[in-house]
Length: 182
Image 1 (cartoon, rainbow, N blue to C red):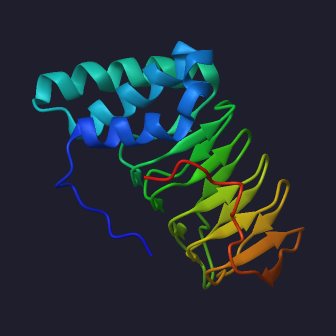
Image 2: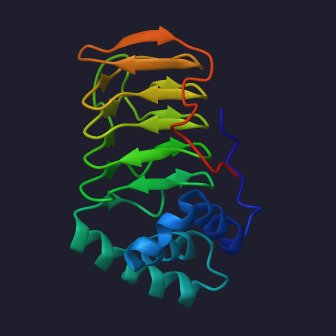
């Protein structure tokens, strides 16, 4: 599982995020602006800089239907594929080198044994329109297929699909899905 540390700087997080895109980053300036604003909100050197970039980040979120809080603990190497209509609970914890695609919801469950938010490990690929909810743990090297509903723990090295979710163990589950890791 991810060990979140604030010892890294804005530059280290931003460069790690941009590294994940490779040459794709040339396709659009929006992704650069979004990641820069997101990481500056979290790791800007002064309170004034963080405040300014919080405003910029809010404007970018509104424009593209993103519900991602700068408070969310997201490791370096974040890749947002088609970053529109993504919702991430502010209390979620997401590891390094994770791919999150269009329409994904990482949310809170408000009652029962799974009351809370997910903790997602390193090298997790979450496909379009997948839903991950509740106080659950998603291990490292997990592929969550598009349109899946995940509300239970998923061990490392697994593929998850369907509603209700079906978990299949697989070594190197994200091989060729998660590239250019940092």
